[in-house]
Length: 326
Image 1 (cartoon, rainbow, N blue to C red):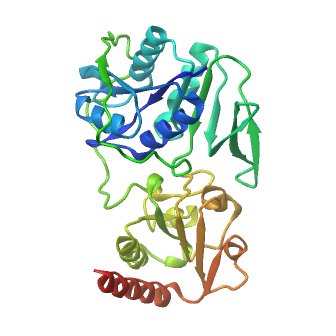
Image 2: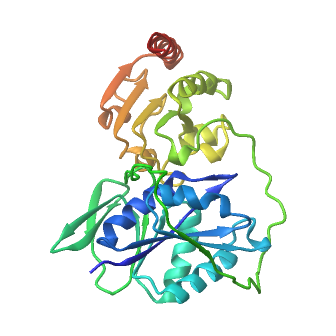
């Protein structure tokens, strides 16, 4: 029997986040030919509805309020709980993002439901979904199932492939009115640090620098390589602690967890805390002067050499390849 699956869609700066489409794909697996209902919460989010349908949503529910321009756990939880109470779905899927990690425990507590977080794959046994998630900083994986009637999971970005976009799909769009009240915090304005390029947490290619970049200027060749590859720049905690870059770029156990198709580690020794944030990348390339660096133990390809010589050469060759293919 098919299930009704809620998917919380995320948006940022006028665009839907790719994890929203990945969550729809995960929801399809859980739904067993049931219904996928995408939920959009925010201010003026109607413009995103058709794109969610194109990526597999059967229905879209919007909840709009001028107090939802910026995310707060109080505001979003009130809205999502109201939608859950009205629709009574069998499952809820959201991204294991900053928003998802903040909101999901609160929703699980209010519902009295179990939560499986950071899911990287979904398998089936006796027609029951089995959820795969990393443990011990990515050194091992565990498989879990939910024995209650309500399924609640968060999925790690870049692990579940979105469905193929089909702009001919149609679906129902409706709205729910929710009175947002008793907010303990309101956000008047968000001042973002200047950032260029692709969102690090959703990038298909990540070029990361460690202490070996030696300075803030040392990240410039890494940014050039990332631009050629259409990727994002990240960093180890050592580089952040040395003030070579902002902590928003930190990858690791106490930073962001990324799983790109290609991860290029430049001047990174490979401390266990850093490996916890990137070791599940599909292909890992390490560039380091020290042939004994721990990063080579997890790398698919290793280059022993000075990153300031290797990275510009790689960038130039890739530029030539791109020009030749156009």
